[in-house]
Image (cartoon, rainbow, N blue to C red; front, side, top):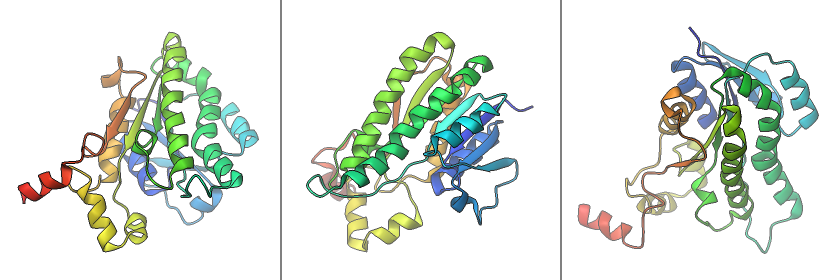
Length: 248
């Protein structure tokens, strides 16, 4: 028997698909929302439905959510990471990133409120990032948007607790993907790993497991939290590379 319906935005991407599969395997009826162009050649896994919706088209979002009759879990995963330093970032770049990464989750949270409250066990999981906690060169828009997501999570948790709706965030560190490997040289990739105590990147399924836990009844008394899934990246200090040298 299904636990209820779970929506995952940006569900056709590497991380979104892993989250969708994890929720499906945990007993949820999963619906992926993604842009039409992202779904053009996308074949949803068995037991998962995919609906075309651009979450930055807020009128379309209102229309879509008005047609829903049941919702238990909302995962705000859709996002983008365009890089530019503070001195060079354009307002167009800034607005584009914040609209998708921060404003869209706010709008979808508002639209899902009634459905989540009526479910009796509503849960929102926002996908943040360690970039919202720790600065990284060129990540001014992305980092600001993810810091905003973390605060939106806390604010929503405070205001939605009387409705019986929980809200938490997951902050992944670097996640293994072909795209990331293509962006980095072998030297940069190795240097990146040196900053992670586990000396490897997260697998998408490891992030998905955290999302599934926070969406489940096992986390029924957890709200307003941001769970880092980063292999110890945030905990690492200046001595991490020395620790790797000693271990080898």
